[in-house]
Image (cartoon, rainbow over all chains, first blue to last red):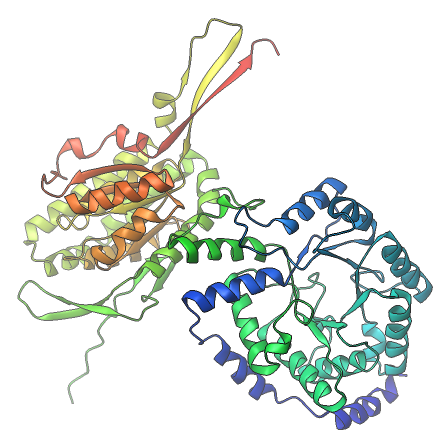
Length: 312
Length: 288
């Protein structure tokens, strides 16, 4: 199949248009120069908090760790003005513990990575069974990985068929399609993969940058490529697709820069947690810290916030 | 054609790097004769915040080093200063010191570093204890560094006073964010260059130049600073005590109006090491 790959890519690129690499880099460099202060900063920080998919994806996750994560998701801080996060994101085996901790009637959704996360290298029926198991255990959202091997060898139909199969297996659960941008190599490929996924997704399903398990994660650059793809797709078809950058967003400052990108590319329609999410674990504490700083005017020590890794 | 002079841009040593203020502001420094010498970074509260973050990052590693190794590194800093005496003397001359006064201050500074380098692996024996208790337990008191210490250096003795404040704090594994003399900031800039070559991990000592009026309030309120030391005026002391009460930090300040003799033997003491230590007492059953 490899020999047909260039032709397949060329056809797709012709359809969706290329990415101007220099243009994207220049555009995102500008986002870091915006001055967001005082009340607008506080608004942004709270909005970002409400968009966090509080994530734990480690081999050492235990039911108790997931429970404490859920507690943190429900009440990130003792200040009642601070919203709950959008969702917790856990491995399929931990979904039932998350559901038990959160209960049925809860504002916090449960997302689960399924489909042999993070590599996706398992037979399709195994991956589908994993999705169904996670949904029946109570997952509201499924984060799947695409078949990067198939994508890079130009087997686009296979990639889309697998996404469609997972979408069906999800039932009413929201689907998030992880492109794993670090393995796609170029901005053109990221745009191409975004379009392949969007064409088989339902409105308000997500495309997501990365698993967080590789070296390169969400950057303003690949976020920009993907939200521009979402914009172009929306303008052509009227179908709104949501976006989730994941991995590498650790500070409130970064989060605000991503929100600026969303505001200036997709507009206010996307500035809510059904259309935009942050996949992160340490980001939440920094958001809380900066909210507290905005409210009190006093710089805060990280150990005033729960589960800070550093105690010095 | 005459050669154009290559003048140095003074930058402050923060987090192991030489930085300008994030605000890009500077203030002019004049030499003793009143001629323009250089533009010095006018650090802001955000620079202080960044310095505290750098100190927090460096802290655990520095505290985990063996006391012996910390002693070696502080001794090495003394060596660096000894080897670059001439540079430092030039820096002190800009502030109006005479040659002999500069030499005296440098010698005293090196001796001070060696003094604390010696204490690094000995203060624990003196300050820690095995306490007598009326039950079958061992009862130990051991010391721990407090964390990040904020220091306000006085205007006079721009090198010696600064080092006399920094050295006892880092001896026990604390990290330091220091505001240096505003009137004579240049020796601290040169000291930063020596710190960078002394095996001291980046971020353990962070030096800020700037105006006290801008920075002292943030020193007072920043909750990540565990202690404040140095020299302050009456108004500053009040602001610091109020801020420190909210964030529960230890305050030990000398008064600007009662100048300290930094050359005196009284300006160095084991008790200055104790000022930035916490004491932990633990019980352990005998025979278990």
